Image (cartoon, rainbow, N blue to C red; front, top):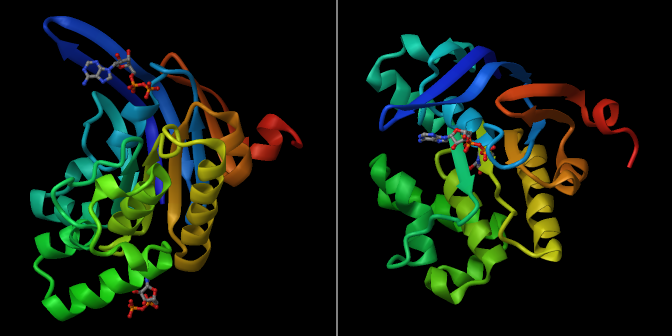
Length: 232
Ligand code: ADP
Ligand code: ADP
């Protein structure tokens, strides 16, 4: 589903080069919940941003769903991006829009009809347990509820892949557990492949089947969670 082959990434900012990734290779299979763990600055965020083409590799191959991203036209990339949803640490909701409007946004942008949009948003809000919040605004919601909105919005265009960038790092342990349970349900019920990055071992142990451990731009260990970390 996702293949990264010998990826190097060097950022150049104000004539200063920063090497973020040094020859990273990994494979995420369909149906995986694949965790990437490492300290801040290890290159995790760069890695996920390569998958949805927010960043381009300096060298190496990014292959998503069998397609080499570098070979795709702008039009094809837009299509591929619809297959990839993303959620964020700080949720990235539009504060001036209602919960309904936030979840509907990707459908409105891809010019779906009103009826289809309404059905889809209603279904998604029910799926994440927020049917009663449709007309609320983000600032009326708890952190966990905001992340549920983020998940509903990410699912709106029926992606095959969900990328999670420190999605539970701003949440308390109990809320984290409920969001991880919801991610499991997304994986189970919709068959969506999940790639998540975190600095917390407990997150990996609770939801992931596979893990890559990153340090200073390299993967130092990779495999099933049981093989890498042993039994909890
Ligand atoms: P992590 O997500 O593990 O904290 P990042 O991928 O954010 O790691 O960062 C890896 C390295 O790349 C860090 O040294 C960081 O400062 C650098 N970096 C990340 N993004 C940029 C950027 N847009 N421009 C320059 N350097 C960057
Ligand atoms: P359809 O193609 O009519 O949506 P599916 O069998 O693909 O039928 O999906 C069954 C239900 O699950 C539908 O209500 C659909 O909206 C929902 N669904 C399917 N795939 C996804 C996805 N990737 N994200 C969110 N919901 C999905």
